[in-house]
Image 1 (cartoon, rainbow, N blue to C red):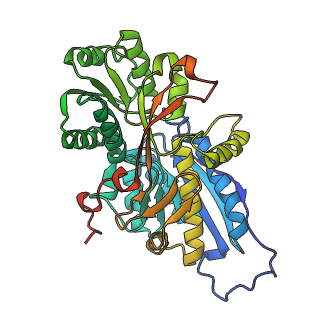
Image 2: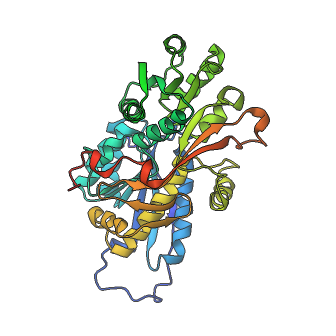
Image 3: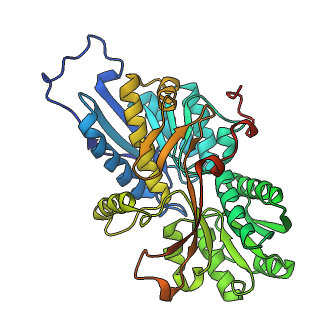
Length: 405
């Protein structure tokens, strides 16, 4: 079987050969860090991550250049096609044959859990920028993995908190029938229950569903105040569009537990207006996010970055800085370096990496604007609530991570 990955081009950050005296034995082989961006390049999550994640990683390499010294950085990327076996094969080849020192993104929970184990066994770093399942820093935590950006607990918790404030405490779930959907529903249910809310029903659907009619009829008849989509990508887009056609939105609040701005753009504001979403990043949040987004758009034909893509930038930059500081490619030592002090990240704010591998920072709840509120393309969100760092992620002692003592 041909392993579907490509070399994205060499991004070099290096001083002249004689400018810096090199140690007789380099801890980082050939003074080169190689990062594999593993994601969905052609399927339902390609817009959320895909080639945009590669572009974001390249921007991180550009920003690392001023501190790189003699280090060179190379970016590879691969399409796992949302299949854990394909993703696993790519990663094994990357590490064993291509000398990849870290893997970022992943974007699919099933793939991410498989890669998590491989990279632990090979003692290489996994910056799981966009693996949603909170089990990655729970029962499957590893000392070589950092879960960046978001997870199912954070998204369910933030959404439930924001909606409970406006009295929406009865929910009906329409969920993916695989790891991500199960984790989103489980974690949102936990948060909702603690807030005094109830789940009045749920239904599961396979990846790639095109007809949500029966699911939406069940949601309507449930009488729930909130219809929560525990899915993402193409399925979420289809579900929200059809919810608008079925007339769900005027009577019930829609929540997309894993929504990104490219999803909203694909839905259109007419269909998506009022949708509640939780994100770690929005391009128009502040001056720093706008500056990064301008650079990203210049590489991506005017597209604004998603939270996934911003997470790749942040996690790759943090990895490069930690690997240089630790002077090693050993995953457990690099992650230990990342835990030593809070990271001042330009996009996510102050980021702290916990012993369970969870990178914590604020999370944001948004409401999708009505068409007449938007000033133009990509002007999609209004801020509803900010969840501070100490409330945004699952408490360290609650996840069941064996690294927590």
